[in-house]
Length: 216
Image 1 (cartoon, rainbow, N blue to C red):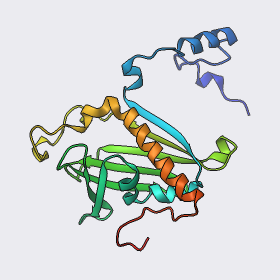
Image 2 (image 1 turned 90 degrees about the vertical axis):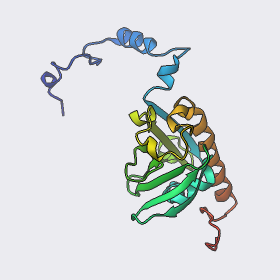
Image 3 (image 1 turned 180 degrees about the vertical axis):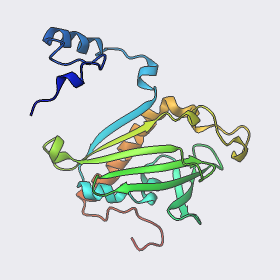
Image 4 (image 1 turned 60 degrees about the vertical axis):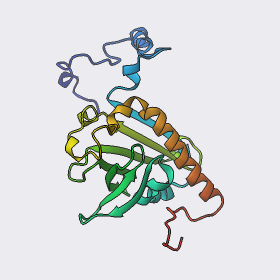
């Protein structure tokens, strides 16, 4: 079934084979492919990373959908406990001493997505959103396991603490000061996730998370 080309005629800037031949497309592609990228191009409004994990998608999803797994594979988030608000947990972020982090997990098993809605200091405005999608590696890489896509967006609150009165100390470092290090830090954490899941899956261990006093 053909599309109605007239419906695209008033859309500026489209690059399609009808308007740009192969040479023009190659020129545009080359223009967007750089050997060196400016800092703001890499650490701008989005921070996406991805990895292959040799563990079935269903296990990866179940692990990520459990808020307590964050205490195993992240660098600094620990000790989540439920709050009086259903689905909301309070934990600690040791990136800076005495910092509380609040988290709600929004997961969809059909779409294989897991989102962490988080915030430092308070749980009413969960503006730090960590987005994950798990894809069967057989579909995209033709090999067993999962591909995990993880993205963050540069919310304006990263630039300025919206609730400074809730900070444990006036000199406490704000999370947004680390934005330019998100790619490196999250790459390290994603490698942690990969190591935990692959080790347990390959050795036939319970995936977890493994909680004290939970009989696991």
